[in-house]
Length: 307
Ligand SMILES: NC(=O)c1ccc[n+]([C@@H]2O[C@H](COP(=O)([O-])OP(=O)(O)OC[C@H]3O[C@@H](n4cnc5c(N)ncnc54)[C@H](O)[C@@H]3O)[C@@H](O)[C@H]2O)c1
Image (cartoon, rainbow, N blue to C red; front, side):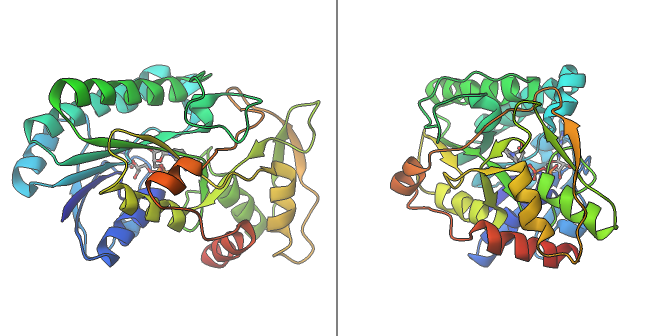
């Protein structure tokens, strides 16, 4: 099978590319390298430098004739989306529309759309949160991901496009960009490696920080492979169902270092959710998938990678 991975030069997309290649599939990557890096691109994948919102995308489909599209390209920072909602819309709404139109024109067999759990469910007491929870996004990033899911329903009903939506929890692991605003695991590790002191962001009444569901990137890649032939027309959470506070995460990472500093404390940023954790029963049932790497093991592998 030939699969096109958009955003395949990025953190998660490159691990997804590795997983498809290991399973014996052909991989084509489309990425504009806005946050991605050519070092992440597997040697066996074919690479096109292009923007998903551009006309070049159609030429790629014409040349490569992919059977499946696994859509990871996105503006990924919640904070950046609150500062510049238009830019978020350009990539996460208009870019997606261009991709959907192209998929329909070329009669693609299936689209896997990567969405988000936390930013779509918003702050909720219903944890771990199931897929049926009403969307209540509080950032342009969450709003546009939710809009994307609704467009998929339209393209499914109107044009017969086959799709599966994967709503990720907080993904971490090797290759995550430590210089961005998202990706607390890689930020903590790289700040400690530089001998500096990381900051734990928290709301004043919850000094231990936010509650998050951290899932290891290779488990996430395996979920994409499972979704290639299962879960048609479904929205599916991909996480662990377990929560960790930012403070506890810091201590778990610090335990791999000698004499780690006490972290600085910072105020929660605009769009920061207090809590997020995904119910993964549906992924187990529909995709026969569950995470296999626990937080301690995943952090150890990630610290080793960056060291
Ligand atoms: N990292 C997480 O915890 C997390 C959680 C939920 C959802 N997601 C989603 O997973 C996907 C991958 O995220 P990531 O963490 O690997 O981020 P990333 O920034 O490493 O990867 C995104 C990739 O998309 C590329 N890209 C961005 N805009 C593009 C455009 N207009 N045209 C072509 N390529 C473009 C970037 O260059 C980059 O390589 C995104 O859709 C993101 O919203 C990530």
